[in-house]
Image (tube, rainbow, N blue to C red):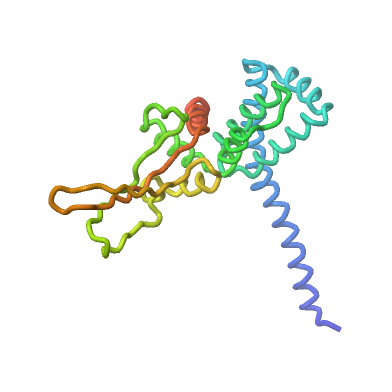
Length: 233
């Protein structure tokens, strides 16, 4: 038979675990999930009604949506993204606006919308704001509705000269959020080699490394600007 002290210790540990679980659920999970959910449902209803509706209208609308299998599945997926979002405010709002547009057209998310939703889930509020600042500095997009910026350009005049292509140029230029956007497919990198002639040194090569912000970037920037006006309230 185990000593009473061991049994008591085990009992106390179980009680402590139960208490910790209740406290974490109430003060951490429920608190922050609720905050994100409030942001989502508020902007979801605003997007569908084109104004801030009263609670009754929102409840009636949600009841109608939940009766439709496809729309209820879209709402479930949206809520899952909101609960897991790193962003406490801007991300849930973006998810709300994008999902409302999907439901209004009775469709499913297209490729661009899937990227927008993934970005809203993955990036923090500060990272989303930093992304918006970077995109605005580009000015207008090109004919493909993309933004492009040269990260580095190196010239070589000797065939024996070792070519060095730096790693981590995206993070160095923009910050950690750039690698996250690259993983989501919103940003890509290219390395191009250009051959040229120099009056003094003869033939040379130029290695150009560029960052490409793809089509959804402008839309995401616009959403961030539109939905970040009171995030500190």
